[in-house]
Image (tube, rainbow, N blue to C red; front, side, top):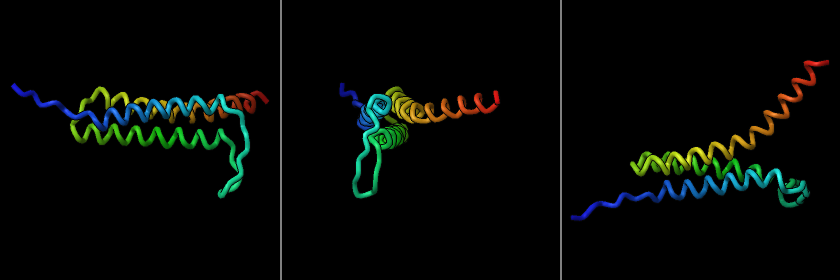
Length: 109
C-alpha cells in the first residue's frame, strides 16, 4: 500500500519567503534612517528594507501561484500568498495612512 506523497516544495518555499518578507517589512519601522552611499547614490536603510520587503512579497506570491499550478496543497500556497500580500500591504499602509492624514489636514483648512 504505497501512498503517493504530494510534494509541497513550492508552497513551503513561498511560505518561508512570505514570512521573511513580513519580518523585513516590520524592520522598516524599527531601523533608523541611516544614509548609505554606494554605486547607485544615496539611500537609507528604510528604503532598502522596504524595497526588499516588497520584492520578497512578490516572490512569495509567485511561489504560491506556481504551487497552485503544480497542484500542491492549497493551504500552504494560500498562506504564502497571504504573507506576501500582507508584507506589501504594510509598506503601502504607511503611505496610505500619511495620505489620509494629509487629506484630513487639508480638508480642515
